[in-house]
Length: 171
Length: 199
Image 1 (tube, rainbow over the protein chains, first blue to last red):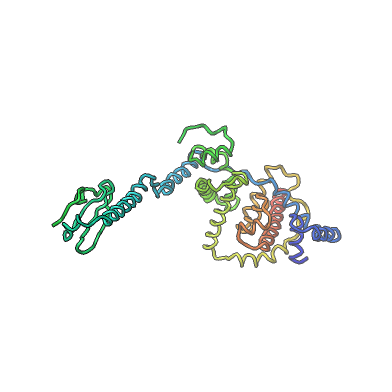
Image 2 (cartoon, chains in turn yellow, green):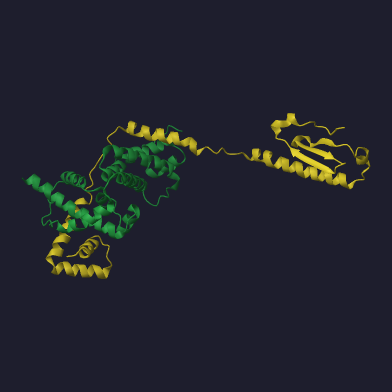
């Protein structure tokens, strides 16, 4: 009996053969005593092992066994929370306020640009630094002579660094 | 974390509570099934300390992956699969430290199982269940890790050839060959144990 035939016998025993092949193997074991003997041995071994798994118990007390698991779970837990959640309000404050300030600034510049430039003529050569919206911490630097306007935003915590809350002319 | 007593809860409720972060619920699951998970680790490694460590590692992994448990199988089946995978990784690491390769072993065993005479008489006939378990445990201890793994997965976990091949990471032909050798060797070992007893 070659190895392929032996493995076929085993597959037959384990129900891993298609119907037609299984019938062939069955017929073979009925006329070949060596095949029948090997099949019987394989069947006995399989039957002996079925539902005969040794019953084993953890050789440690419940508390001791659990303590290591618990310690490791607790050690690993903080790593799950490394990325702190950002609240919606914080996100608004961080991104929407400056965006709002920018929009307000654009509107102000638009309206100022569309009015007669009499006001601007008085100090046309004087650069100015002004905060357009005090609550949003947006600051504008404008130099009419250069035709330059710069806007910058400061975080709320840096309010003390903002030059002034009122429009201020720099000579 | 609450101090709720979970001893009367079923596994499904415990899993739900554990998913919400109730460590006490998970402890109850560990308490209920720790012996089964340990037994699987021991049957694969045959080493008491390794089996304890691997089963504990399996529980830790289980806690971390609770969100992935879909409930398609029982919780113990799911946990056993985690344990089996950890044991296979462990055995692979051990194998790297050994000189013999799996290919060499397969070449050797390719002819060996054909030379083992067929055991005509059932060596386990008439044995009490406890005695049979003892003999099987002793015989399993004499198999190589590769052969024992395939035998354990087929006979104790009821996995099909294809599932074993996928779990172990080898071909179906290798699974069939290892299973055949393992069974023949088991038959011979059980016969030997019977003869020793009869003497």
